[in-house]
Amino acid sequence: DRILDRFFMKRIGLRFLLEHHIQSAKARPGVSGIIHSKVAVGPILRAAAEEAQELCENRFGEAPRVDVIGDGDGDSCTWGLGSLANLDLSHNRQFTYVPIHIRFSCSVMLQNACFSVARKHGRASSSGVPLPSVLAIFSHGEEEVAVKVSDQGGGIPRSDLHLAWTYFDRPLSQEPTPQEEPARGRRHTMPLGSGIPPGVGLALARLHARYYGGDLVLKSIEGYGTDAYLFLNRLGHNCENLPQGVRVSPAMRESSISEDNAIRLDSL
Image (cartoon, rainbow, N blue to C red):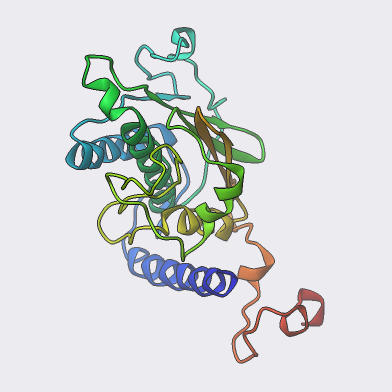
């Protein structure tokens, strides 16, 4: 997993450079290549939610409602948080980031949440009871923008939580066999959209966040549901705040994961 993490991290950087170079040929106000100076997280979350619901309906025949809170444009919520539907948590702060990377990570989180809810509660909803809704809330802080996606999909056992980040876990089938436990609630159980192989969605989403110094964290309550936290580092106006592993390239050096072979900033 660590070797693949390093491989995909470098691949994200290469694709970033290529796409940024191509898009830089177009002059657009507030945009430099694929970097946008005023990123609106709310519309990105709502577009990702619609895509997740469509994929969930195609596979399970139904999809939970997704409530998005944070920019004051939310509808009435079904989580008993009606007073927060119109809450504006942007605090008039400008957010510079790469929208396509936010869209990817949010899509993975929301698809996982919708699929987990439909998998656990799908049969119960046939009696007329609606599926529990999924809540997506975001806030603009001084140092970062955080996105939280909460579901009631049964949660993940602590002994299985590490499998959410591995590239080698076998995804569960849509209908569990008698030998499988139907309510384990493991993440990325289904293909997450076109071009994303089953079983690697969360791992790749976390790498996209870490590329800019952010992170993706899971907190689960087994038997109830899971909260996924996406932390997006504010890039500023003139530069990217990248982690050392991205700023310093190990090109022309031995690529093992040992500390001795890593290039350090103070050695340059």
